[in-house]
Length: 313
Length: 298
Image (cartoon, rainbow over all chains, first blue to last red):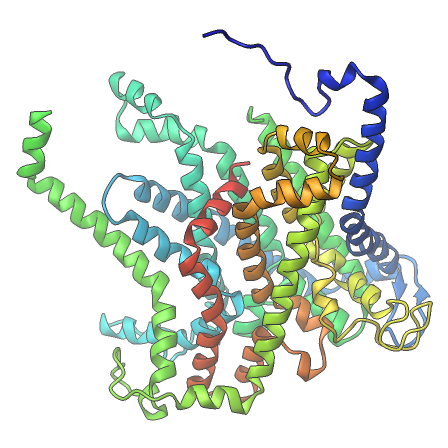
């Protein structure tokens, strides 16, 4: 049997290069087709992503309530923002929320993924059950949890009563409302991150563990010096996506607590929604959105930088 | 080998204890994850009197469907259902078509600026939704020659309160383009060459040769897009103020505000809202998990 060396068919491969006339005609045909194929997508991208980003920037220097013509106010919106205690309350709530949510998410998702990875029967069933909440809508999930977290007839407090504990009015209490939202969003987001961790874990070669075991590494040492570093990219992805999600927390805070009680669960996005669409202060809301987006960008870039410094791609 | 076989036959007590703890822990988590679904279903089937019974009723003593009837009569839930379903389906159709067109071009066709344009489009994944919220609303409102608007987008309501307002901004998402591009890259070149030798047009090569090979990718993307569209909340809340245009997610809101203590119909409505995506999930579990894993491990 002879081995045939066929020329490689890379997109800009060599066999076509030998016929320059034909190639240029083909290239032109491809270019025309490509232009047609990507035009709808790029047009939508232009109108609903590029243009809005610029428009948001411009709007943030104006006063606009839809009904009366737009008015330029320079930096007034930003000045007002600095002293807007309510907006900063929203930012602070989101910060506290993220500080509680991110570590819990990483610990739970990694722990459960490690458990599900063990070659034992029934793991598929558990994986399915854990992923179930991620499929349903945040609104439906939050609605059911609000009912379950009711003080008197809620099933959570009934369960606590069964073991002799007296649960508070979770959502009506400013000390517990934010914790309840952390819990419900964790319930919802866990499944997806477990699967991402499972994918990450399946990328680690088994031989590494076998070699480590031969060298006498304990299970904890294997976890600490093999699993954790090799999963750094996955952990980065999970943290990163969760953080961007946390900054934009809205649905649960809207459905479960309406931002209350007493602004305890007002989030930054909730403030922007209120200012922009119920009070029609579009310019001011744009300034707030811009500050929030900038914060997300800064955190994203810092995150990427840290990630690079830690020696990852 | 035989030692391992022996051990399996006669398990050590410590291993049994470990297994017990292991499965016990997982079952506990599973119960927490599944409890809301169970509790929503059970509440929706209980008569009003039993919903607020003090020793909590884990299993409904009497089953009634009256809450489902009331869910559909106190608010026009059928209408909401139709709205959500239409918009989610239109979103799927648009993303499958436009996403695969662009994905195909970025993966298989040569043109100047290809990599650059793709990277720019991909960067929109990083643009937080909150920044485009207000301008996109204004763009839809000022859409020329729509909803009573003149050529300059003045006078009417543009595309607000139409399905377009939800479908159009998400019609060709960055994820759809990225996902389809990745898939088209895995397909062989030979088909393209064969098509060209036979004199097929670029469109025909795409439509008749490559697209049929994408069925698994299209199914995955379709399921994902449907779920995302069905579960959308904040955006419809902003672009719809006509009660006839409300989605099921907004419909749930209408319940909890107007009937603060009416948990029976609210839970019945929650069941109805969750049902389509849960049904899709049951039939297409593999697709769900594989595409989630795909997003994470790129």
